[in-house]
Amino acid sequence: MLVIISDLHLGDGTTANSISTSAFHLFANRLREMAYFASFRKGGGYSPIENIDVVLLGDILDPIHSTLWLDTNPGAANFVRPWTESASPFFAAKLQETTQAIIEENKESLEVLRRCASGESIQLPPASSRGKPDMDSKESIAPQVRLHYTIGNHDWYYHLKGREFDRIRQTIITTLGLSNKHDLFPFDIEESPGLLETLKSYKVYARHGDCFDKFNFNRDRGRDHATLGDIFAMEVLNRFPVEVDRHFGNELPEPIIDSLRRITNVRPALATSLWISGQIKRHAGNDALEAALKEVWDRICDEFLQNPYVREQDKAFQFDMVDAMELVIKISQRTSFQTLNDIVIWVRDNMSEK
Image (cartoon, rainbow, N blue to C red; front, side, top):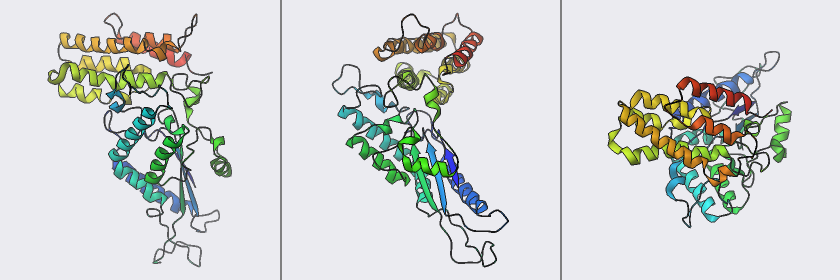
């Protein structure tokens, strides 16, 4: 039996909240039910299935949406961001810190997955001599549950090579009960011959979709490098609530603080300016505060657009993704919500990979 899951986006609690633990318990129950019903074979006979493959198809842990990366400033000796040199010891150390924080924040939820993989949660009744489920038997059958972790655009860091990253992967393997080797969390399924053969046996091909997204995948540099999406997530989405809290503190009503912490849930990310406009308009309460909040947003967006790593990707004499972002992310009183919405839709339709 094959199950594919993606985009859980489990975070460390410094930005949006993760999926509740109850959802993982529900998943374990559903997995058990599916395994039971999958054990009824063609013709009606019952024979407990032997294998369950669960493919975690990218963006399961989400180290990018963490404000832990923001504790160093440009120019500092230990400055590190997801797009700086991954060979730096500061990079691996920060990824380890963020990963451990995610594990602690989602400890019970991840334990549910580990128990599934260990055979503790998925138990099936044996077959009777008549080919029916023997519900009265004191014995039970535990199918082999294999959890396979592949990476996407929010957890691509776990694809990096090196001993420091092997140790981080091993921590994840142990925590979730993964079947991966410590030196490989694949991006392309072909990187893992075993997983490729497993999917072939189900007549399925699967991959995360970031390779078709110019905002979140750079074809020239490959998956082991950060993208505009990473920089936007860190320097705008993660940073905006921090900056607002730093500048305004107790002046803001609780609803807007709560809303801003959920900014990382907005999809597509390029629509964030439209969402922010609506939240500010709804919760600011007065024109002066609304203008001040917009000023903070515009300032960090300007700083994002001047980021050297962003400027490197601005192609001369072409309307590219950087130019599109300049249109989309800035809020101004001269741009109506409807105009912003029209721009977002245009970018979505015209800047995706063909």
